[in-house]
Amino acid sequence: MTFDLTPEQDQLRDAVRALGRRYGHGYFVEKAKAGEHTTELWAEAGQLGYLGVNIPTEYGGGGGGITDLAIVCEELAAAGCPLLLLVVSPAIVATVLTRHGTEEQRKKHLPGLADGSQKIVFAITEPEAGSNFHRLGTVARRDGDGWLLSGRKCYISGVDEADHVLVVARTEDAATGRLKPALFLVPTDAAGLTRSKLDMEIVSPENQFLLYLDDVRLPADALVGESLDAGLPALFAGLNPERITVAAMGAGTGRYAIERASEYTATRKVWGGRTIGSHQGVSHPLAHAAVQVELARLMIQKAATLYDAGRDLEAGVAGNMAKYAAGEAAALAVDTAVQALGGAGMTTEYGVATLLGAVRAGRIAPVSREMILNFVAQHVLGQDKSY
Ligand SMILES: Cc1cc2nc3c(=O)[nH]c(=O)nc-3n(C[C@H](O)[C@H](O)[C@H](O)COP(=O)(O)OP(=O)(O)OC[C@H]3O[C@@H](n4cnc5c(N)ncnc54)[C@H](O)[C@@H]3O)c2cc1C
Picture (tube, rainbow, N blue to C red):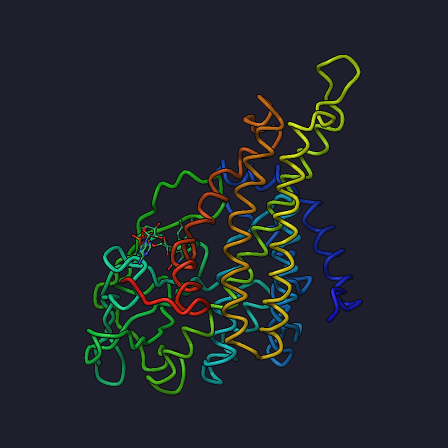
């Protein structure tokens, strides 16, 4: 067992940290409040190869694994730039296409995902189905050689920044019962695809949308994979990378908040010569949060290592646990940091309260803490399903 990164991964961590710090949380908040995107940061990360670290070299990527992409997610978040679309475009979509796309799909999309010139977002959630994917109602009907897609999706991140959406649907002849998914690459400018922006209480340069698909006509090659049988494994292929990278983003956000608070409490004095950090009522909650974040990081490392070793089932358990732990730790760390800063904690200037909405959402999305507990109860503890 080793807890060391490879020299290349150490270099990647240092380089991404330097990039993130050059932009910083001020940039992230400024973009969010102006209703703009972190276009410059995304482009630079793409040019430097950080967005494609996990994409095979023959498609323009770095040929690394999810461990590498988790480093990118964590370090940008630790610099105050938690970019949700990293979890969607390079983690979920690039993995799905690498593992289950056709050769044409890989050639067409992976180089752009790797250098950041292309973003593909991911749409599974539906208003009626919610956490129960077996109730998905987006249906694909045969239309000559191609397909007609109809349905509704909600909370879909980044549609306004992407050229395609990877839509999870089901075919007409498998429209009820256990989910037999079919995944489609839908251009965001396709006729029949419309969107409306949701007002979210999250300070983020990335937006969420309702998507309406009204008989969206797609060519045969919009279907991901060689046949309809590719749907289920393709959907599952995206889950572990999603869990692991969103956990890494949470851990990075937790580190960022604790660092901000520690700097503040180590210098702020309101009782004579003592710093407020010398009061254990202030330092212990921060230390407790630091322990929780570090424990989550350990689980992320385990999950990513198992995943990169091809041990998908074990990575599934570890990835879910890592996501749970990191989601809770990030929420605790940001809340604790706000408290430790007092009034300054609620200002925009000190840059911690600006993360409250994001870390709260991290306990709901992309998979809620309750659904992870259901997974662990069922698959680790052998309990019956209640739902
Ligand atoms: C910021 C943000 C970004 C998102 N981005 C995307 C995206 O890009 N693409 C996408 O497809 N989706 C996205 N989502 C959607 C997200 O994945 C869902 O919100 C999440 O999976 C929960 O589904 P729901 O909102 O329908 O909640 P529901 O399923 O309605 O659940 C509501 C509550 O009930 C609990 N619950 C439900 N069933 C059970 C059960 N059986 N046992 C115990 N508790 C249960 C849930 O845990 C939750 O707390 C995003 C959401 C947010 C907030």
